[in-house]
Image (cartoon, one colour):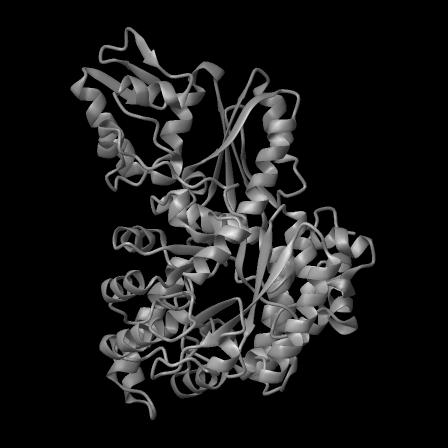
Length: 575
């Protein structure tokens, strides 16, 4: 075994690269298998090296004997000769081009051969010189789309998806908190505010033994590289090239430092102006008189806000979007809490493109203390996801009935994630829909429609019989695909008028609706539903990401349908 554990992210990255290179070679079927395994491993809540040590790699969904063997090689040797051979067969930089939205294998090779492009930097230069539009099959609009995709790519390489780094960051925070020499430890920065993407991870600790704690931090098995080690500040690099900064704070200043380093910058600037109005100054060292003679507050965050005449502002709201004014007026919402949800509205199983059975998903939901789980597998129109036929839906219903008879303390409801066709209709017959407990309607294709066309499509779907919720309403994939053109105000108005839910899809790449859109939807009278869109038992942990989005969107428990018990949910659905 390597001295430092190979991370899940590194294994996933290896498999993703194999998939891309095989696709470039024109190999059929295998790329999808490697990509599916990579996606599962990327979202695992357990270190893959621990799974390998137990000899259980092939129990991971999508990991067969061949892929498991390659994973073991990477873990044992730190590299993979098979991947090296694939790389040798490919022109330099072509795979990098495939990281851009809209650039597949054929287009990447075409650009390389016609323009001699060997990477994204070369492509950007060519596009800005208007060389791309001269190629067969390209135009001015194609060239602009490439430049837009490059900007998205640049942003992606500077920030990380919250859902994929939060687990690791919290694990490091937990190890520090449990150390005997640490009095307090807390994540700060954009992670604590639960922004959908983060640049790095900040952790504050209070201790009387800074050298001991700093050495412990830099010696963590998660550390791939130590950038800086000192008694007051350390930086390590962990999986995904995420930089984790440790700051050692005096205990009596911990509250002020936590408030300062949590941010946001805009929130803190407004607070500092407010402090100046009181002839005080606010810094990471505390709230003090302007001459520095007396400390007003510093040990606890709550004391700082109270001294400034404000109610305590939860970290998720600190974005300077009116939270300070609301805290002064006493009108901050009583935010939904992370333990308020009774169940999940949208999860997949082996019946479509999920990795686990109905029973396995139900048991995992029960183990999380939930009262219900709605299985919403894909409908037949989405062939790529092995959507269910009418016969499959009926057979699955019988399986769900059997699971409900056999399991206690959890109820499985049968739903469907139906496709919203271009005309706004649902691709499942009404005679089937009316027998289901829950119907999600989602757009899975035809993203390039005009705003008017897409709005008509979604609004028409909202008015379809038996529809309960619009899934991932804007269609975005964070850092990969922009939302489709949509008049959200019109969608909110229609959803509110007929009582159709809009989803807060908690999958890390979606978080759709976003926090800003949640707030707008709530203000328009829309009821929201938080769902994991889980395709694996481990994905059920993403539900808290949805709660984080809801909190950032100023939502209270009553604004989210699955804060209701099973009986209350059923009563609401019958309305």
